[in-house]
Image 1: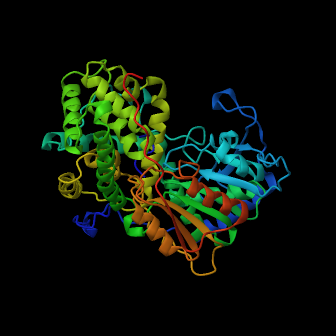
Image 2: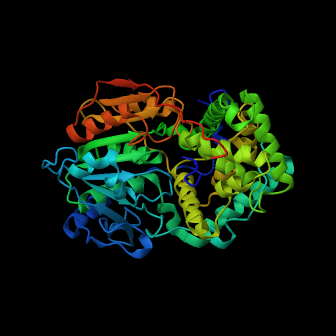
Length: 525
């Protein structure tokens, strides 16, 4: 989901008509199942030659690294191969509270989302107090999915041109701006094809799920224990549908709506609507702490203060580096994670009082991070554009998002510009898989969701719960931070630990009270 670099149902919107959809979608041939079996058998024989991680990977000595060989094209398992980087920290085997020996339960594999995000740092969580019990029983395994980082990396543009410095971000763009952005999106899509060639078509969510099964085999596991967050839940849902007999335990943390008709255009519309509500949550919190930040004692007044900041930055970028687009990217993180609220409110407050330093620190783009950011966006686009049909006529995007922006201006058009290259995508489109599992087809699975999550709106968790018989849904009520596993809710974490360590779930549904809102911090501090 949108966007990995940053990343309410929209039923009232006009939906895309078949004539506006780009290219006829193609279904996955049955030979891909055979190709996956061939690749998995080979991986089980070869294993992964783990050893010290390179300095470039910047991981602590306790983490070891290796590579996994997978087919670029699963219809040709003996054809071109690509290598995915994998990281692991071995199970400690010792209960952190009692010091008693703990039996090893195998590998816990993580995908943190995206598309386009690396999970190589996941094993580092083993030293965090909230993860030590899991790290005692499991090898913690992370990996960089195909296209990400050093795993057959994708690129759509020269990274040195990726960050262009201060930029505008109109919430209601003019016709001229729309034409310019459409032309830029088309050029970006061409760049993806020119830099990658025919291989571009093989960077898809179903192939990510197949790679996961090859990784399972290479780790020596007959069944997979998996924790997927955000977009990682969609990979997990595809895996559960394609390889149900290979599932041991599976956690879906902040679930993407897997309904085929929602992948991905309609999911992004719903996301933009949900971000408006989450942005309102942030503004209401700031208003409650007007005595600290001085940005207004109502949500409307806080919005007015924010608009003043945007207008000033449009005239004169802060520090010559931060314009409205950079401001928006920084504030979007507050809509993802409420632990960013004090920082962001402080930055806005300080800027309006004449100190742009905190805002520049939080919002400026860093040239040294441009290559990683460009790679992330390239993989994001390749996967989402390849996965499903998208409207090919900009008039459809314009109609739907102009209407949506009237009630949800905060994120709507920024979301459009992120995804618009999919309108001009040169590679074939897949027909999304119908994710589902009947009664008894899967062992119990666990879905974690926050009611006010904007990046993956709550209806996605409800839909996944309906589609996977035997799943359990744990809801953090009236909360909206994205990604719950190991987060601020002790209640959610207790359910997660009980499931992964004991296979225990709290019935069909359970709920947790919201975690406390963050405490404000004084700008003077």
